[in-house]
Amino acid sequence: MDISRLDIHNSDIPELCKSCEVRHKGMCGALNAMELTFLSKHTRQISQPAGEELVGESTDIDAYDNIIRGVVKLSKTLEDGRQQIVGLQFAPDLVGRLYASESPMTAEAASDVDVCRVPRRILERLIDGNPELRKRLMDQSLRELDEARDWMVTLGRKTAAEKVASLLLLIATHLDPDAEGEKRVFDLPVSRLDIADYLGLTIETVSRQLSKLKGEKVISITANRHIEVLSFTKLRVRAG
Amino acid sequence: MDISRLDIHNSDIPELCKSCEVRHKGMCGALNAMELTFLSKHTRQISQPAGEELVGESTDIDAYDNIIRGVVKLSKTLEDGRQQIVGLQFAPDLVGRLYASESPMTAEAASDVDVCRVPRRILERLIDGNPELRKRLMDQSLRELDEARDWMVTLGRKTAAEKVASLLLLIATHLDPDAEGEKRVFDLPVSRLDIADYLGLTIETVSRQLSKLKGEKVISITANRHIEVLSFTKLRVRAG
DNA sequence: GCCATTCCTTGATCAAGATCAAGTGGAATG
DNA sequence: CATTCCACTTGATCTTGATCAAGGAATGGC
Image (cartoon, helix red, strand yellow):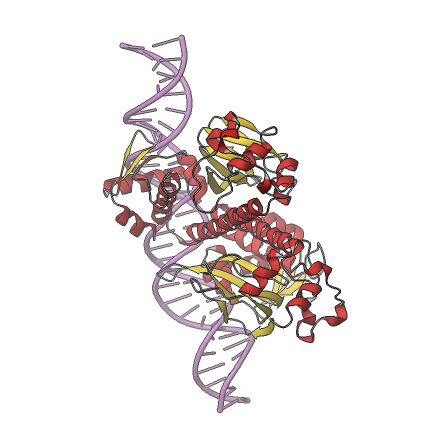
């Protein structure tokens, strides 16, 4: 099962997963070309429109999804319907709680999403025999833990204005296809309701804060979702 | 480096770390008897009174601490001094961000704490050669991620009353030395300020909510820190 | 192009929790 | 035993963000 010995070339990568070869951003959960080749008989590429569920809260996990394109939101819901988004995942993250039989949260396509789906048992077997992949997944988990804890500070201690500015920075950072930078112009991959659910606010407050940032010439907004950051410096100051 | 082959008996465990043999609670980060024996020449038992720092935010990590007794709080601070506690750790958790050279947060003794300190390089080498330990640490990280995300729901979407009830349940669960139960009588291991910083509230609000729970006969409080839960059912209802 | 629907914005009012300001009580110190 | 100190409690008031309500802009179907 140690696939590092296999003589696999990029040309062997099955067509359906060519697009998985997205650029890695430091530590991440993506499967590499060799691993995808190894798994090719088991993987399926799946396209989900925005709003479709990938995994439901408290449902059995029988597959992991390697994100190829788009944004996935992870959320938890209280009995009375209050919802909190507990994470956003971008390509090439791996979606799914490792080593659990039941998902502790819902994973839903925030934007239109393409994923490469791998059956749970198959991936777990691959992990066992592949120390490098295991390390990569450990690193993704630890990075997600760091991000969750950073976000706890935002949720617990920041004002509405700081929360909205923080989210714009987060998205600008993660959507940038290039290494360390931030995207100056981008489309919000999520609705106002999603933003509110991520920040622990209401849609009205989010809307007001975005309007305020627009009025202060920190950002410009067109067509509801299209954002241009006019000053990262001001935005960072406002993010606290 | 595969220590699972070593012929080690419990009687070989160095005296200083005998107490490390606390009961494991399902998945956890504690080192087991064999590992502690292996590490005995490198470990030091350290006692810190409440309030003492184990690791500072943004400082170099040169050791990991295996908690033997007490509660450790993990916190992050904004430039202007606002603080958020992002996790509590109990025996036998391992304190310290794995595979990072710099700590993303402060780790501080919440109560009086005893830890077994292992130099970073030594533990990392042990992990590399010990698949079972690696799995245990992976499980602790994933469990901490689950807990952080659960807490994000509390921070983002619960009322002050629900937050305080949730924290009492969390502490009652973690302080119980027995497997699956909850402790009915216990001492809060943290101050009102710590509770406020964990819940994203002020000490005044925490105090008012505790008084309210006392008035409603859900809990009784004596000597500020000593809590008796009179009705777990009511407490759970109030935790939302 | 028109309509319906959904998503977003803006305004007015309200309430939860923060802030400001005294207290209270228990433990430690002399 | 008195005193100080610190952690906590309680009350009064204020502010932030929620709620309620209406209207506007984008999107999809026909």
